[in-house]
Image (tube, rainbow, N blue to C red; front, side, top):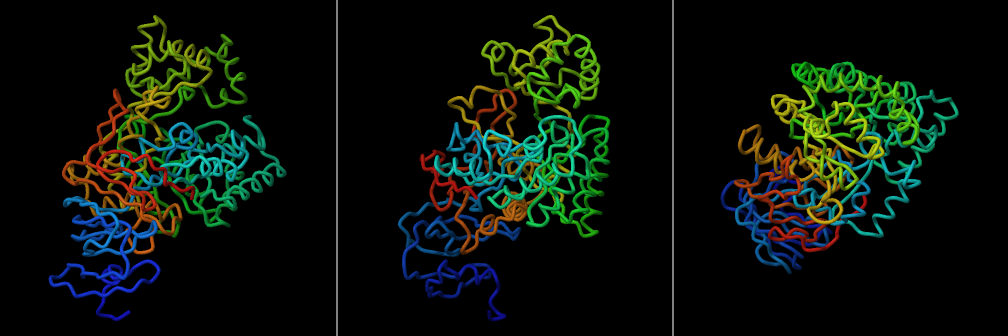
Length: 544
């Protein structure tokens, strides 16, 4: 390449497949050349500010799509079958969410409503140690991915293999040490999932049964991850009182195996730990400076969401659902569990900070969903623990909560750090159908527009160029996606148009099933999926 032609100019003059372009030089500095094409584009997105996703400033121009891929950037005229006027809005790569629990929810809403309407074109599922394979309901990554391929989905999807799922498949859900033979069986099972397309391993070391693994067992699995150059994503053993030790533990295991590390939803939870945010950053920065490939993600909210079973001590969660229920129904054991539960309430700042977000039974949905545990206890005339215990028994453990236990200062600190990136920790939901029947954390609908609107535009945490990089090329590179995350010729045409002046989340904790504003257009693999704010009904997603 001639030394007087910049990389950006070269990219703008390129076309997938090497189609010939005749270009005339631009006049002003930063103005792309004008192209005359030997054949039309399928789509041109015109008259926008193009953010390529690499963090560089935007330029005024167009994006051309041909055969599902980005074909050219610049001033492209009207040589296309379809033209969309971006009207001065931002044109950028589709958003990549590297920490989700989407998974089987696709089977109820293949369109991916809560994802696609906020500009997400790629979800990574199977997080926090829990994947839909190989312990069930699917026997392997290939089987589950084949189900999604045959059904068709509205956005792209890839998945980690859950370490808890691997352990459950080989050992069961008991707190038992793994034998050498069992470790070898887990390694072989993990390797099979990676060879079938899984993008790495996830751990959920606050949850059973993954938490029952020793560090030595985990490093043996990470050796397989490192061998395949896949990613190790970890929900750490502790995110509150011992969070610094948990970060150090994660770093130590990744270093021992030579594995790439992604710390999931980094937080310093509960008031007494809020001051630890900078210390966590220092631990991660030091590991990075010493050569460890490490980064982290965080959702832009001060509340987390998890199962109500977290009020049961870890050892009490062993075994089957019936095993756990029998303990809850044993008076002496339940009393001991209550001591643990009350300590949890205290660390959360009280039961008024704990919101019931999901139940299965209709009368419990009506009575308790959207109310705090404090309110529910008052309604039922029970203590907070007795209410939680009885609800868990009646719902057979299938209840969830949202807990307000974090601070905005740490949200800003983590999101603004160069190694940090937004991720929702959410899933597919929809305002219609069965997935509308709970009150999920609003992050499932609002993570990325909230990041762009509240934190970047309103609070000026960073400029849009850096923000777009954090939700496109940065997570794509962590996941090892070679042709997504950038607007660059040859890359898959996952594209979002958003309004810099109006983009914002509308989902709330009280009313979460609300789509955001300011994202009128989304293309998935070159197919116009959100058009003028309306879903076109096409399912153009790929299983990656």
